[in-house]
Length: 216
Image 1 (cartoon, rainbow, N blue to C red):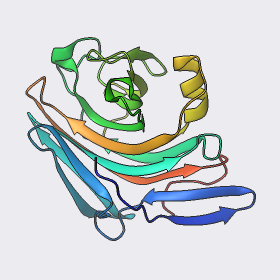
Image 2 (spheres, one colour; image 1 turned 90 degrees about the horizontal axis):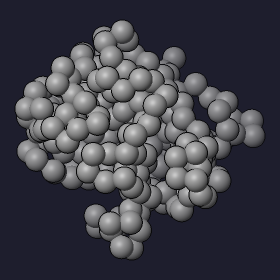
Image 3 (cartoon, rainbow, N blue to C red; image 1 turned 30 degrees about the horizontal axis):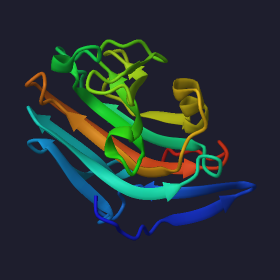
């Protein structure tokens, strides 16, 4: 990814500092970069009753949106967002390469100057993996899939997620984390040759879990 300057909105809530990555209220922020893996997932902003949100459509394709943002998890340990999926991917299975597709995922990237050493935590809406479970990606052990939603029980409605990424990193990799380098969004269906439709909104990082990422 090329170097870029990140413009973000910040505000204070008591002792809690919050950085808004994107709430999609003014179309797709130009700081997002497309990274294509196999065809292109279509990312567009659409209007819902609560305002503008990001819509992702994938048909046998896999591309992601990367937002470069360098920060320390010691300063901003929490990542919050809300999302919705129309369904999970019937043939999806996180334990196999041919099932490594997800209707929705948000991941945090920890870059290394030697790319094979780059790590990531993928917060996924899993197809079969139980909520709270994490496993290495079927492609590399340095990329971990962590299920925060799973299956069809909660499809069709918005859900707010909040993760303590600092604690997740320590638990998963058993060490202190390096600097974060990017936050990414991805809806992909290239391995299963299926389709997926999902929505994302109100992505932010926080120093303390005091604010509600859902729109009022």
